[in-house]
Every structure is written in C-alpha cells, then in structure tokens.
Image 1: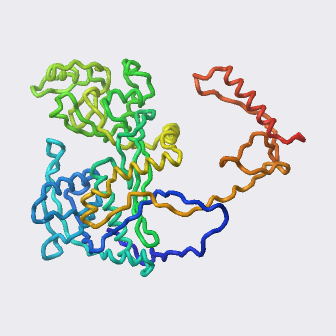
Image 2: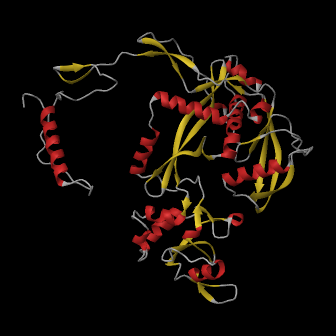
Image 3: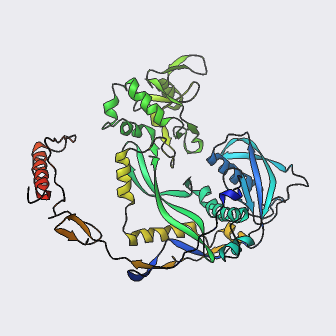
Length: 468
C-alpha cells in the first residue's frame, strides 16, 4: 500500500469564526455519527493471489471463497478481517503468518455456483500494526495529521465497504442494487445506488452516505439487446443481415461482456465472456462437430439440443476458438458497467431518474443506511464500530437573496430561488442579421415548428431595449 509522505500532509485549518448574516435554522445532513471507533491496534497484511492479473471482482470472489474455506480453522479462528479488493487486509486481531516475513500460503478453489473456476494460490504476510488510538487524538485536536491517522481512516473506509462489495455491484466507493432501475436508450439501464465514506470531523468520525447512480448494460436475452444497440425497431429489421460497419460497432460494445447460456437447463448455466461476433449468421456459420462433419450452428443446435432457432439470421457470438453460440441462447449477466461513456441523451435520462426533492433524497439516504445495516454487521461488531442511525443535525443560515439587474431600470430579487426573465429587458440588445431553425425530430410537424419560430421571435423583441 502506498504511504503518503510528510510533504503530502497538511494541518487542519481552524475556522476563524462563524457567520452572523441571515436567518438561523437547523438542517439535516447526510452524515451519520460514529458512536464508537476501534481503540485496539489493527493488523495490516498484504495478500497476493497467483496467477496475477485477476480482475477486482475475481479477487473479491477469491477472498470470499478463501474466507468460506477457512471458517473454523486455526488461521482465521473466528477472526473477521476485511479485504480492500486489491492487496490489503485489515484484521481486528493478529493473524499468525509464521515466524518470519515470508508469510503463509494457501490454495483457493474459485467457485462459480456449482462449477469450479480453477485453483489459485494466495500468500498472506504482515505489513505493520496500525495504532487506532492515534485517530481519536487527531479528532480531539491533540495530535497533528500523521500517516498512521490516514491509514486508520482508510481502515474504516474498507470496513464499511467490505460487506456491500461482496454482495452488490460496486463502482468505486458506491454500490448498486437492481431493485430501483430505469431503462436507458441503446441497451443500457440506470441503477440507483449509494455512496459511503468515512470522514473525520471535530471530536468524532462520521459516515457520509449519499445516493448515487450509474449506467449498466441491460440484463436479459442478448438478442433482445441487439436492435436497441443498432437503433432498430425490432429484430425483424435485421432479417436481411447486419452490415459489417454496424457489426463491428456492436462487437466493440459487447466485447468482454459476461453472458450465461440457457439451452442446457438451470443446472448448466455456464458463464462466458463475449470475444467477438461471427460475420455470418447462425444458419450460415459452419464448423466441424465431434464426428468431423461440417455442420452449421443452427443445424448443430437442432441435432444436439432439439432446438429450432427462432432467429437463425442473427450472427453468433464467439466465446473461444471454434465455440459459437446463437444470440438467443445467451443472457446478459446483471450489473455490468458499459465500456463506453453514456451518450448525452443517456446522461439526460439519468439526470431525470436521479433528480429528487430534498425530502425524497433524505428518505432515499435513510433507505441506503438501512441497507448498509451497520448495527448487525458482524465485521463492524468485531472491529468495535457502531454508527448512530439518525442524520446529524447541523446549524445553518438562510442567506438573503442577492439582487440582480438585467437593465439599469430593472433591479429585482429572485423568487423561489430563480431569476425569471419574464417581462424583463436586457442591458444591451443585439441584432441578428439572419438565423435558422433545424428540425431533427420527425415526430414534430411543420405547424409546431412555425409556432415555435413565431414565439421565439416575439421573445427576442420583448427582451430588447424599449428604445429600440
């Protein structure tokens, strides 16, 4: 783990005074106070999984399998360390890693449901001991910021993220659940989630909880996603094939997307990653079967699984060499982030989904707090951490609204938090010599466009100076 140098650390700047302007009020904040933090030392360990290069979700899965396999055994002995997801472990009690710095090694069998994902080796060795009592000295203003205090705050961050990261889809410090989601254009959907982080404040630690949102690939049958990716009305529009340019575009989007196959029954829902698409359809993609005979993918599924393909005109996906799967037997695994950045239209739809009034947002934050379930989290209990279930009330002031002038003769105060231009003149008018309106929406008729142009022109006239 990278350590911050002394040059990176700065002292907390004390607030010189509190303001007096405005009306004093009390408001709820999205901070929840910790009523207790660890007072005993925490052991910092390094964990390495071999072979290297495994992804973050795989490493978390490996740690889960590792922890499950060692329950009741001497190494853990009912101790509940937390995993940061990369290489750092934090344990509330010392773990015996041998008498030297070489550490201790284990073998981990990665499990995917009823199927083994292979055997990995793990190596764990101690790094240092974190004195958690120094964190309270910092909070009480009796100590400056030192590396140990920053590491202690990181321990709390990892502690709070440990269980959600094992149970939900995670992105950074946020986790997301499919219970509250909304479809987006082009085969995506936005999920609501929650962000949390440990923050030091005067006298105590706080947990900051807020709502979050991100776009995921839409889960479900892969073939149903295809027309959405190509902006087509239905699969019928693809019966004549997909042009190479569009196929390559879809291939880039789908590459490395995780899918499960559904043609072998519930007990054999094998998981794969998409590598590429075939340039030919399922009824024209030929390969050699186990007997050495050439057969199309559509014929193979008819002969082997007695499955007549409903969409043989669609390309197949390739998951590995000479392994072709028709799109209709594949389902997209839930909770996978899109590779590409959401489009402006998708971002606009996400903003609509996430916008809420303060009271609704507060209710959502409380829902997130309940999902996190700090009170009954066994890891929090073993580390000696507890969190107050109520939003922290803080003092605030409603400042007087500033006045604004659009014109020398028109100065006014905003109403309802907005500055309205209705009935107002601008300070300096301008003349548009020529301008035009382009209609890209086929659903809007010419009459509506002409009405918009008349209203827009009248607004320009109304906002100009009276002298003009």
